[in-house]
Amino acid sequence: MRRFLLGLSFILAACSGGNSSPTPDAGAEPAPRTFGARCVKPDNMATDCDSHVCTDTIDNAGGYVCSQQCTVLQGTDPSCPDGSKGRYCNKKGYCKP
Image 1: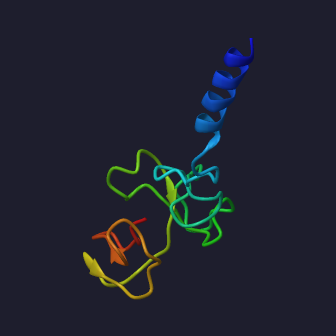
Image 2: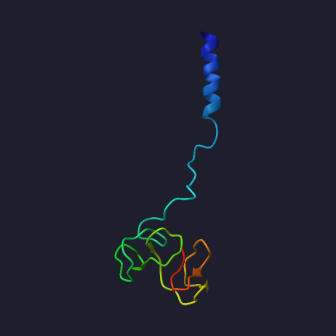
Image 3: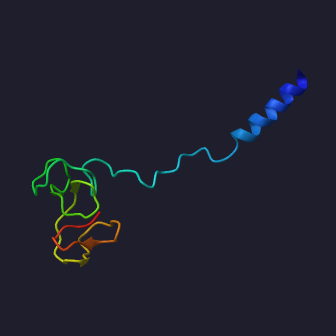
């Protein structure tokens, strides 16, 4: 019985080691209302986005997302927040999350 308990304690000690802090999920959704978060209806006065801009012009977004308008079409726009392509403004004048 002692050998069994001793063996079990070694197994439990080995399994309990390691990093116990959670790692962020790389595919996690942005916080509600923030840049890149899902929104309900494309509108430049959307109440479910902090920027008040909900758009359906972002390719591969899979729906409507909170964004903001920009002016450097199809290129880097310093007024855009960082997104998947950096500070990118799409050809329709919306920052790409």
